[in-house]
Image (cartoon, rainbow, N blue to C red):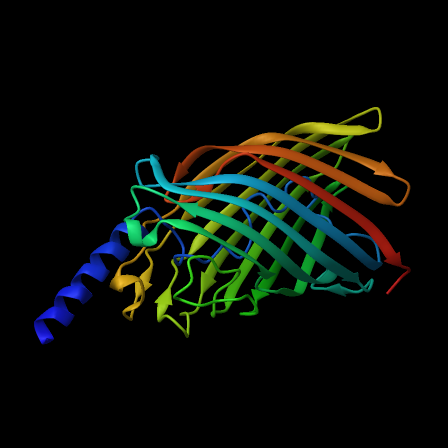
Length: 308
């Protein structure tokens, strides 16, 4: 009996190991932010004083690749909507304009697995749920020259998403994520040329004893006003810098490979009364140990109230 149990456990570990070989971040858990999330946004400059609302939505037809960039047998149809509230009270800290923000993400994920996944892990799963809520208690912006801004901030992601280590699809993980960021925006002569860099580090998942590796995400925008429409290239680069660490027995004791992806596309922005609309179309041109593919983004921003 003991030998049989050990053999079954060994087989289960091998199955799980083969399933996780092409994944990055904790298996079945989405990244706390989709790569490219701030494309089209003048990230170096804070809005004027007041309360603002943004609705940031995306539709992604994606696939999983392994460490060689080959198809790993998993496809995903992802739709996400993030409700953001920005508060700019009109005060300065360390000479910079202050902003606070909260983001409530909703995630829909339809997933299908086939070979080379082993038969016990093949099939379809889906999830629609709240993701890990982002709280940004501080964001500062400085105008260093007329029309040129730099910014710095901190986001904290709370473990509010649905997580079960036995499920193939989750909307979040039972861990905290801390994400300091810096931004730059050139807003002269009709340009929105912006770069936003964020570093992500997580605590250990309390349910699975798994710790995802640290990552960096860089989003870039170069939109030029052309008679009311701002049009130009956009893109992002995501790179996992440290390896995952599995301190338990979940996923057969295995860890995921380091992720990297590079996405390029085109963006456009136009003002419609008080509402600013931004549309981006991107595709991943380099993808390793990650889920990626063509994506359509629609972002709407509007003021809700006067001076804070």
